Length: 547
Image 1 (cartoon, rainbow, N blue to C red):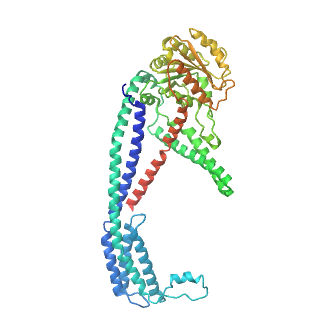
Image 2: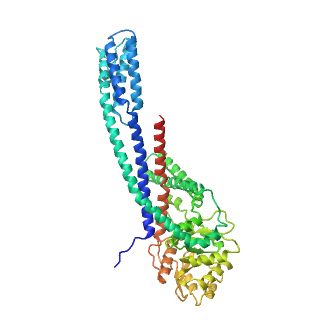
Image 3: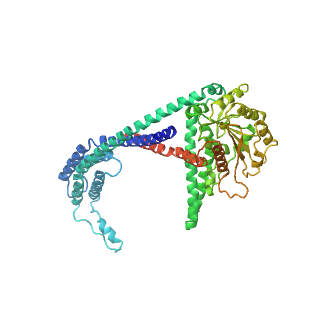
């Protein structure tokens, strides 16, 4: 037996996933490496400044007087030098834990106590005695016997600064080496996956262009041209909408949990109101931006890399196909149920290729679902005929309209029957629909009997055809007496899977594609969070470099 090859689509998605993760890690380590290099440059003069600081402290120790009403000029000069070197070292200190900064702060505090004594002439109070005063109120606090101990303490702390600086320089050098190695490792590991991603995408795009080349020329005339930034901007806003939506859902869920735990009513109200506000804002943002963030239809055909799935329907059915809520969700998850019926159905059909449909000529914004192609009124029939020839599947949702029945009759005459699927609308059916269907086929379909078994509101049956155009009718559940926990969209996917299996086309897990597609969309949208983290990291690094 020959070894099975990895499917190209799986290899493309796996390469893209691994490459994106490695590139993100490489960018993160590059920024961290740049920050460590900046810290290393800031500490270049720190050893010299530390030695000058010790020299200034020694001069102060040599010229300091044990008592006196005011500071002498040599004392002021030594203190001025100490302050200048202290500020220089503190300015060069990297952010975070820095032992030299702690030594400088302690030394500065001791010097301030000595200055206070020289200005006031009174000895400072003992901090340990201040703690005891709370236990013994009314007693006089003891004072230090010798103010010169503050100078000794400050000089002791300042003598630790050079060793602290040396340790910080060693730590920074180790960080530079480690982060540089991590950046080079992630970058080198990302190269083969990125190259594989690009090559597979180009091969798939080239094959997609060859598949759709004849149709693209006709569709390009009426396809709206958008600015280059249009899709990127709405894609970013879509990611923000997903983040707001899920944050609001988590906040509302936390409010319900807090209610059962007996937490303060103010906290519960804040969580509930904030969660509802974020969820509604995210839902509104998604409904507005998701249709505008879709891939250009011509590019979608080219990017597919495989024969498309042609979805034909009457324009009258677009309003019903735009309804949402076919997947019932509990609690605040209802805000996430914004997928339309056509979008869910197109997700199922996407297992066989990119789903395309002929768009309404006067619509300004294509609805979610199948990719819309627009053709001139005098050439749409030839365009649909070519799409039928090049498509892997032709799915026709039967309904009213002579143009729709022309498409079905053309499919019966010129398309192999195994490529054709007919979707019957939900009850009540349009008058004479099953009779018109039987008249277009060589033999009666028997769809009228199966339709009465269906309890689905959007689709009542899926009809496939064998090599002799004999109909295989699969009613869409739930059937009479059947207890089903599936949503209407999952029932349609189940009937579609059975109808295809009846003509020898087997594809498992079509119903689960709706759930996995939703998770994939949310996963792509949540890429906004690491991107924002990189932007914030880069902004902090730039501000640090300017400092």
